[in-house]
Structure formats: C-alpha cells, structure tokens
Amino acid sequence: MNLKGKRIVLGVTGGVAAFKAAYLARELQRAGATVQAVMTEAATHFVGTATFQALTGLPVYTDQWDTRIDNGMAHIELTRVADAVLIAPASADFIAKLAHGLCDDLLTTLCLARNCPLAVVPAMNREMWANPATQRNVAMLRDDGVAIFGPDSGDQACGETGEGRMLEAEQIAEAMDAFFVPKTLAGRRVLITAGPTFEPIDPVRGITNLSSGRMGFAIARACRRAGADVTLIAGPVSLPTPDGVVRIDVTTAEQMHRAVMTELDIARAVARMREGPVTAATRAANEAAAADYGASGAGARSAGARGAVGGFADGDGDPTSAGDDDPALAGEQAAAAVDYGASAASPKRGIDAFISVAAVADWRVANRSEQKLKKTDDGGAPALEFVQNPDILAEVARRPDAPYCVGFAAESEDLAANATAKRERKGVPLLVANIGHETFGRDENELLLIDAHGSRRLPRASKDALAAALATELAQRLRAR
Ligand SMILES: Cc1cc2nc3c(=O)[nH]c(=O)nc-3n(C[C@H](O)[C@H](O)[C@H](O)COP(=O)(O)O)c2cc1C
Image (cartoon, rainbow, N blue to C red; front, top):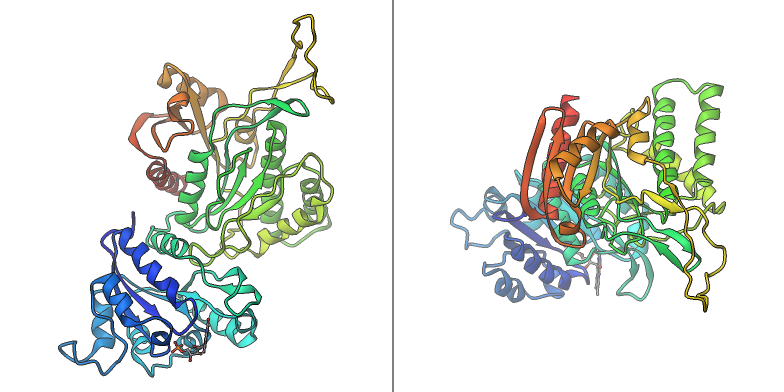
C-alpha cells in the first residue's frame, strides 16, 4: 500500500473525536506508516499524551518551547522528515487559524512552516460546521491546496444529528493512502460496469451468474484513487461503494444498457453545452437527455463516503436499487445531469473511458411470466424461450463519441484465442481476459491484456493490486490517444 514507509505527523486538536485519533494512529501504523503525534493543549484535555506515546512508540510534542529537540525548533524539525501532516480531528478553531496563517502554538506553527502536504479532517458540531465562517475557512484551505477529508454526517457527541462528524479511522487511513497515489487520471471521466445481471423468469426466480462485482469495484476504486471522476453502474451485488465513486444500481442487462447509454448521452450533452453558446437546439438535446435519464429504468445514484480522495464527493454510500421506469427518479437524475456541469474535475469533453467489467447476461427470458410459475403434477418443466440482450460494449465502441473502451472477457478455456477474437468482434482497443470460474468471487486474479499489438500478462495478485495496475495502464493509453 502507499502508506508503507511513509512518515506522518498526526496533529490532534481539541475535539471529542480526539479519541478516534488513537485508532487512526494504529490504522496508519498497520498500513506501514510511522506516526509522530503532535497535540494542541486543548487536545490533551480529551486524550492524554501517554496514549499516543504508547501507541506510536515516539515522544509526543505539545509545546513549541519543548527542549527535547536539539536545536529547540520542533516546529521546523518535525516536518522536515515527514511525508505529510494529517490533522485529525481538526477543530473549527484550528481550521480558522490555519486558514489565516496564525501560529501561536506548536501545531499551527508547524503547519505554517511545513514543506510537505497537509490534510485536514474536520470534526465538530453541525452548527459549527455549517457556520459561514467555518465554510469560508475550509474553502480558503482548499484554495491553498490543503486536502479536506470529510466530514461525515450522522449522530454527534452533543446529541444532535447532522454534518460535521469526523470520518472513521479506517476511512481516514484509506483517504491518506489514496492521497499518495499519483493522480494519473486527474481530470478524466471513467464509466465502469460491474457485477452480474439478473434476468427474471417470473417474479421470484431468475437467471444470473457467479460474478461477484469485486474486480469492477476494485477498478472503480483504483481509478478514483488515481484522480478520475468515476461512475459505476452495478448489477445486483452487496459490495460497499468505493469512496468518492458515483454508483447507479441496476438489475437486468437491459437496465444496464440504458444506464450506460444515458450516462454517455448526458456527458456528451453537458460537454457540448460547456463547449459553446447554448443554442435552442443544444438546449433541447440536453433537456431530452436529462428527461431520458429519468425514464431509463436505471437505479438511483448514490455516492461513496464523502471526501475520501481529497474531499471530492458528497453523499452517503448506501446503494438503493430501483425497478423499471420509475418516474420518481426523473427529477433527481435530471438534477444529477446538472451536477456534471458543477463537478470541478469535469473536463469539457464527455466520458474518457468505458470499462466494461460486468458479466452481462447474453440472453434474457423472452416469455417471462408475470406470475410465479407453478410446479405441475405431470413432471413437466416450463419451456423457457430466450432472446439476446443488447451488446453494451460493442454498441458503446461503435458510437461516434466512443470513449476509450476496455472490455473484459471471462473465458473457461483457450483464454488468449477466445479473448483475441472477442476484442476484434467488439471493436475495442483493449481487452482484459481472465478465466471466469477461477476468479469469480475470489480476492485474487490473473489478467491477460490484449490489444492490437499483442498481449501482456499481469501475474496473479490481489484484485486491488491488479486494478491499480490497470488504472495506470489506462492513464498511459489515454495520454497516448
Ligand atoms: C467538551 C468539549 C468538546 C468540544 N468539542 C469540539 C469539537 O468536536 N470540535 C471543535 O471544533 N471544537 C470543540 N470544542 C471546542 C474546542 O475545544 C475549542 O475551540 C478549543 O479552543 C480548540 O483548541 P485547538 O484548536 O487549539 O485544539 C469542544 C470543547 C469542549 C469543552
């Protein structure tokens, strides 16, 4: 992981969430980082220095007049060997001081004098967070290039409920780890499908496959960590949404098809709108695309926990599935189309890459029953008829505005030959092949990358490691495009 060998100055300020910083110190160390704790005087009212000293194995500093540092300048020396300063929890007071460059204690002075990146994890009462002064201060920090992780929303120590809760220790450690990933996909927009589809036979039965969605979710996470804006269209799986990823849940192949095409249509419409003056024609096209989205039957959008990669995304991570043609989604999804325009990372163009990882059913049941099929006494079985589902990947690759398309092939034999034929059939520049029954549901995988020039094997590794390698590969290919 990226935290391995990193030296982190963990700044703890005066908030109730200070106890969580002890867990955070442990998480960072588990990931291979060395943690140097520095506390404000207020923080020591919540947790003792002994806790951090015991956990980190290093002396804890609280005072700029501390004589334990040889030259007496702890505010300089402590960051000169650090890879980053992480303030968790960051009180409203501390954020205000940082924004204005105040330095009246060790931690504020150290932040001002640092020569390494700074990340801040706010934690405070919801009214303190919502206060325009705090919002102004946070905006100033963002402008100064400071990463803001969170805050989360939920129950607060004071008994109120709302935004301002500190992220959990694991989330902060994950955000810090992502912080060190080179942002090779910054400014890129990536659309990914993942998981199986489910094709109903009757209201209670259906046909699906063994895809767990883990590879697609790992790729979504890796692309996000590399700085991309990621939308993940997921079949029926119960995996958590990767931090900062926008997720749309679908069930059937037809819904997945509509969701993919609608995402591409909206991205193109928004890109056109941004490119030039809005004419009546483009306005009509944009409105049609937004309306179409509402009628698409795609599931509701949701986003992974906020702010995990430099505080990009908002929303909670609970996926909500939705059925066919839910008109109630229209308003929300049309609004989501407008969101695209507001995304700071969105380039003027549409979607840069489409990665089709989902194991989409090739066929659906043509004579699906509206009622549950009953077993009969004569020993007979229902005669199911099938019809082919749309070929999502091939259709995306044929579009005039086709993004860079990456297909996945899950084969059971003759991997290279079958995957090479599939790449040509689908008309995509890159195909990633794996043996389906050896990877579905497992944490590890082995991949074969096939393009027009030949093939390259990515040896067996965790799906997270392979996903990170693929994100790097994608970034190189997009640059060379
Ligand atoms: C019991 C108690 C809980 C507090 N919790 C918070 C908190 O969660 N977030 C916050 O910003 N301030 C909180 N404060 C206020 C800060 O401790 C106060 O602003 C302090 O001056 C912060 O100092 P520092 O920024 O130097 O650490 C709390 C105060 C008390 C007495």
